[in-house]
Image (cartoon, rainbow, N blue to C red):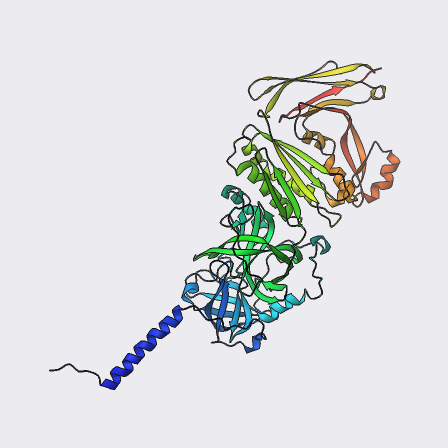
Length: 601
């Protein structure tokens, strides 16, 4: 029996079908032709329907954007608030379906029928078996762009925009039954050792920034910069920087819309702080790291190409051209100097500066700081005397233990509660010590604790260094006639303890001072943290008028101010310094010596 064979016309059609299937497979495998019309009219949300197929343009590697396919499944009405909807799309492209929405794709423009419909902005869940993404409608992108229409093409300085609200802390996965999260750009910390980047991760998270040490920049590199496009186009990668130079902190996203020199990107907020002035930088995508938790682009941050001016709910927007004014920072060590510039932002500037100092101390191959070092910080404010701060550390581990205090000092120096102004420059010098600064005090011996008026009193201090070497110091005073009959105390304390004993707070607040100049003077008044202070104190009660103390004020003044104690005036029991001398500088030493002291006639 012969096997059954289909008729010839069936064989012919089957052959044609095979070629058609092969053609379809080849078409799916080939890159999508660029059928978009970036300059054409956008597609209103009302014309977007379930089942529409679209193309999303983004950079997978290098600097050239490519398209991937999506299918509209519907519109989530009022998803982000009244009138703020999202276009929900299934990611049909096999490349993207495997990894989902990628950090760095935020802002990738969505084209439907060749017209701009929105920008990729939100990740839906994290472990879904079919990948979806949310897209910000084009009308919301235009709304952010229109906010710049009344702005000059000169970058807006941050100090002219008013105080910025604290950014929200990112939600963690699993915090909600259904999670709708922005495809937040991951800020790369280039120029920092991984251990340094890890140390500052909690501070960055507190500012709402997800960060990684896996990324780079072209600053200070001998490698040639990537070939940059003559102008940015929708789908190109772009970075927003918080610091540029030897230390670069930048988050990469994608350009959504271009209108001349003005661009709109990200499709969601970066920090959500409204009017800003941050550097826009070119960006080169090195690779995409797929992950079931959070896929991300690895990028190199390029040169500054413009200024970010708006950071809003629906997008960020800025303009190409010169970058904004930044705070130049130099961290100098005996081996080299780190030079970078940080954003004029009261929280970001101290944090980025502290990162540079930590990198100089802990993130290099140099072991010259093992014995100890001094960090001298100089802050230059316009029209003000330079503010200088010196702190001593017994080595890198000692600096790590005292990093929180160092960051608090930087915050006090770089934050300004009175005037919207920022430093002209920050210069930090790290000096190596020849020996460890640890020391111990054994004896304090005054020549007399009941001197006669006019008598010279010598106070001898004996101690040891960390190797049991002998340390000696002598403080000398002449007992004045004005001290006769007063209840006094001879003390030996470190600078912090003497500040506390005399009623000086560990930090200054805006309510303590009346002007920016007095704020800087208050910072200068803190005693040195190294060495010891030998002092004569007198216990007294003082009337406080904000930061002014009036020791020994008459009772009549206290009665007059008593009704205003909770508003402007106050009263404080404290010690007044009649005389002091700083001894054993360049030593980290602790002491709590108190002796009664009486001057007789």
